[in-house]
Length: 282
Image (tube, rainbow, N blue to C red; front, side, top):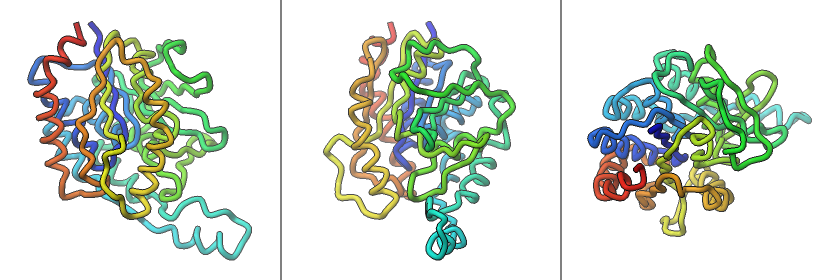
């Protein structure tokens, strides 16, 4: 049976995806299709490249809150008719992602991978994948762009998926500007189905009304986006798989010091729910 796994965004809580993957691997559950958005795209990419969850965690830790202020862009926006599109260029983030992925491209992945970003010009969901085969009727969106890639660097597309609006400048690829994939599909379980998965493990790290008070513009924007797209996640069909949420609401998306705790809590949650997971994959 072909198993897919979908990772939502969630900032540093994305380490919980890797903890859950560790528990799955220990129980001989190895997905062959990985999909992800924002920080979930980082986790999905590392696992699709063949890194163990533990090694992936070491690499994930390198991606910190990298804000390289776009001073010239902001000054131009103040004194000219040019519009301000964000406060950070994202160049440092891009460089770190390239290092984390060892400069590899989609063709280097051992498993099927799909990353979601959002085309800002028309608001369409944009799916980038190393697979040329997909079933559009499985996607919960009538308007989307499909980009089957092979040679494109993974850091380019993951940078696009992580471009939080208002914080990072949109990422330009082939004349289109892209921002955070969470705006259009924060939990791309339907994308995993469209790539041929028969069962999908959908891991949601987002808001459900239990979070603490948030602070800082990046965290406020992240939380705002999740609230807006929560109904989309609720509309997804999880009947041919399992929906998981380790409920890590007490850790902010930028609390770098708690990355190990996120991994451990994801692992413990998966172990506790392993019976339910295995039953859903029958």
